[in-house]
Each structure stands twice: as C-alpha cells, then as structure tokens.
Image 1 (cartoon, rainbow, N blue to C red):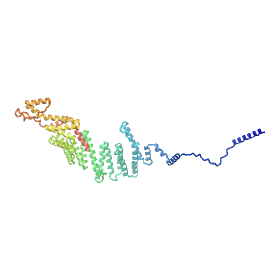
Image 2: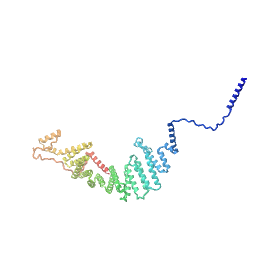
Image 3: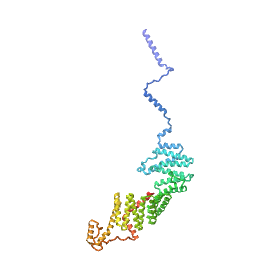
Image 4: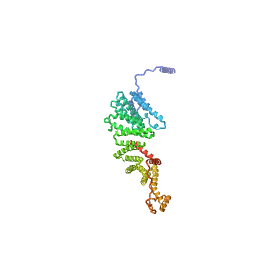
Length: 510
C-alpha cells in the first residue's frame, strides 16, 4: 500500500514537470529593470565629463571642410578664388606657377633655380597674391582702373626688393602698364609711371635698348607736366626722366664704343650727345660734367682732339665748382694726354703736375701712382730725364707698396729706361773727353755699374769740363706720332689699364 502511494506521487510530480516545460512563458509584468550601476572613481567621472564637453563643442564637418585637410594649400586657395568668382585671378596665378615650373625645367636640376622654393610651397606669398589680384579684378569689373593699378602696384612693391622674386615684379609692373593704358583721365600720369617702372625692370635685366624706349615714353609724358607731376620725395617726373635717360644713354654709348664697328662708333657719339642733353635738362651740374667727360673721351678715341678738349674742360670746371678732387684729377690726366698727342708737351706737363699734386694731397695712392707714371712718360719724351727718373721712382715704389705686380713690372722697366737716358749724355761726354779719369770711370761702370759720371771731370783738356753731349732735338709732329705709337706698344699693359679705368669711371659716373 505504501509503495503504491509513493509511485503515484512520483508520477504526478513528473506530469507536473512536463507541463511546466511545455508551458509558454508568461509576459513580464510592468516591472522595470534598473541598469547595474558601477561605482566610478572621481577622476574617471571628470575625464568622461570633459570628453563629453569637448565632443559637444566640435563642429559638424562638411565635405568641403574635410577636403581642406586632404588637399594642398595651393589647391584650396585656388578653389576659394573660383568659389568667390575670381576666375581671372585664378588663371593669372596658375600661369605664373606654370612659368616658374617651365623656367626650372629649362635650367635643369643642376641649376641654382632648382634650389629655390616654388610658389606652391610658399603659403604667405600665395595669400598675398590672392589678396591683391582679387582686389585688382574686383576694381576692373566696375571700371575703376586707378584702384586696379594701385592694387597691382602695391603687389609689385612687395616683390621688387627680393632678387628671387624679381621675375614676379617684372610681370606685375608690365600688367600695371597695361592697366594704365586703358585710362587717360589723369592726363597720362599713370602711363608715365608705368613706363618708368617697366624701364627699370628691363634695365636690371640688361635689356638697355628696350628700357630706353620706355624711358623715352616716360620723358614724353612728363614733358608737358614739368611742375605738376611729382614723386613722393618731391622730385618732378620730368627731372627724374632726364636722369634715367642720361644713365641709360651712357650705358648704351659705352656698349657701342666697345663694339669696335665703325657704324656703332658713330652711333655712340650721337647717343652720348643725347646723354649730355638729358644731363643739362636735369639741372644737375655733376651729371652734366660726367656727360661732358664721356663725350670728350669718345671724341678722343676718333682723334677729334680739339672737340675732346672743349668737353673735358667743361668737366674740369664742373669738378672745380663742386670741389671734386677725384674728378679734377681725372680731367687733368685726360687733358694732359690730349696735349701730349698734339705735341704740346709743356701743357701736358702742367696738367699732369696738377694731377700729381691733387692725388698726393687726397691720399689716392693708386691714382698717384698713375699720375707719376704718366708724368714720367712725358718728361722722358721731352728729354727732362732727371724729373722722369724721379717720377718713375715714385711710381715704382708706390706700386710695390700696393702689391700690384703688373704696375710694378711696368714702372720698374720705365725707371730703368729713364735712368739710362739720364746717364746717356754724361756717359757720352766721358767717351768724347777721354783721359785717364774718364777711362777709369767707364771701365768701373762696365765692371760693377757704378755711376760716377755726375762727378766733375778734371780739366786735363782745355774746355773738357764744359763739353756736354745734349740729347737729340725733338722730332717733328709726324715722327712724334710714330714715336708715341712705339712707346705705347712697349707698354701695352699700362695703356690698356688706363683706358679701362677711363671707361669704368664713365660707367660708374652713370
């Protein structure tokens, strides 16, 4: 009985379990499960709050914002210019970048240009170009050419002082002139200024003839407004144009002279005459004197000596008025050379002595050496051997002190020649007189080159002490010309040096 009861309980329990397993779960009641809260430390809470704050402050990035980080600075700047509608400024900037790239490629990797930074790698320069170019384009759209010119002029001023950016300044100045040509409401003032700036750029690049054309246009515009148009320093446009034309004409004239062709030499005279005229119009006596000197030296080269003297005397007087010792010395030296070529030895010596005195007072050792050498040459040619020896000795010692081997060698030879000429008469006198004393002195000189010929000769023969062999009389003008040509050929190095100094002074004066 008990067993049966136990079995029935087990069976009933099993049925209950099976019913529970097969039963569907009942839906949950309105019981809200709270999340498990973990206890955080104080530092963790502060970090989480800070990151949440920063995340909330971050802007929402657009596609364009993301592109700014992915693209180059140049790319983004060009996109901004196009977005703002400045397509002409964009095209100009891209063309400048392309020009720079082509110049570098043409020069090659071994060139100096290859080491210079390019425009895409210079953000500050790109920003500056964008500001001024867009400002100029905006002014151009409304027809305000003066504002457009000013914007481009300001941009060129940024570039002109840097040699690496000179090509950019040249481009911008040329566009300034193009803009100025569109507007003539100011009487041509912008055009004259534009021609001046383009001429200066061409002059820096060595294109002197093209620069002269722009300076001539500058002068033509300024000629009708001599007193009205003035620069920031107070100088009138007309005076400034005359000065610039004087400089460029002087450079062109020097180039034409060096060419050696007959047509170019004739053209150089006309060019230097124009330079003198511009110097006179500039009302600058110093420039006028330099122009006269250049023109006088040009006439000297073609053997028009009288005309050369007149221009050189103008230079001499202008230098005296300005107390220009260096200029007075140059004038004296040049005038003395012309007098020597004309056969007027006295005048040549007079001006060379002035040259020596000036250079000695002013302490110009190189010029003093040259003055002594030239004066020694003239004294030697007229038979004044004592003074020739003295001046050649000074020139020799100064050239040694200066450490100039070329001048030292030339003056050493001339010093020896002058000493030989000085001794020649007395040596011949001893041969003519004869006698024991004269023969012993001649033999002594042959052995050890001891010069005792200046000592008096004993009166062994009546009138022997008064017997003097004079140097030969001066030759005629034709023979003098031949002798001067021979002298010049014996010392070409120094003559070339003198001519180079004359030409150099002409260019420096310009």
